[in-house]
Image 1: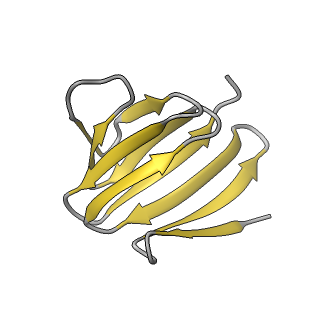
Image 2: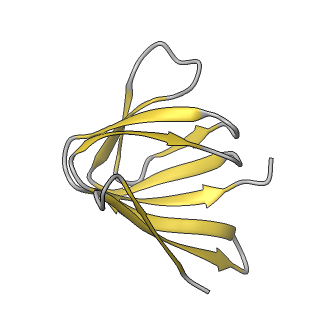
Length: 96
C-alpha cells in the first residue's frame, strides 16, 4: 500500500511504501528551502537528484550530499536540511 505524506505546507512530499526486499521506504521531493525533520527509527537517506546540505545530530558542521550519495540519521533525533534546488531522495527506515 502507498502512503502519501506532505510536510512544510506542501514543500516536501513523499510516498511511503513497503518493499519485500528492503523494508519500509519513502521516496520524495523537496523544493528549495530549509527544513528540520525528526526521526523515529534510524534512517538511510540517499540523494536521487539535486543535493542536500545536512547538519546531522552531534555534528559541528554542515555536509553536502549529491546524487548517488547516502547519509545516515540516528533514530529518535532531529536533523536540519538546506535544499539549494529542488531535490529528490530515497529514505530507508532501518530497524537498528
